[in-house]
Image (cartoon, rainbow, N blue to C red; front, side, top):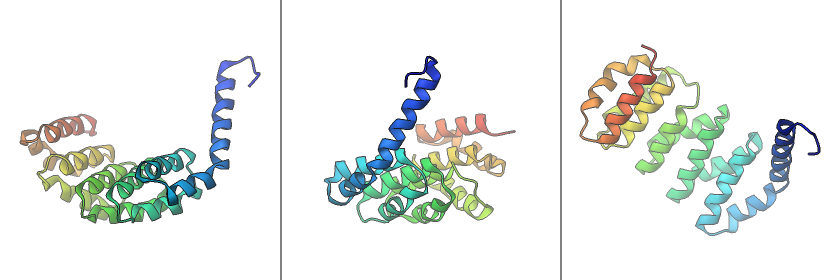
Length: 177
């Protein structure tokens, strides 16, 4: 921290912050187990800040919890971490009974290298017509550079939902054509 170069000071500060997070993992897990809903969601995001394989078991557990808000936050964090071992739970959450969790899973999958079977499952959401799921699928497919989807994305420019039209336009911009 006493280095004269500011970029070195910044890197040292970030390292210290991360080490402090690793030391507080036990506290975070305690809050995750015993806190109120807001504190538990905060703990999920704190685990995401710590990152790494070490935080996957509690996040995967939370992604399967009955509380929609907990599942949704866990899926969001798992997607941001983009660790390959989280992929199966995210694919599973595509079948969640709540659209908010499905939308988070769709978004999360855009951060992974996925196979043709998962791409096909994402493409199915292009027909959702709810303004959210097809928009998220459109953007994820664009991030994945799934040019096969372009012919199915173009008609979404005429959707009744502004969010879908915007996502389709953004996706077409992002796609390698």
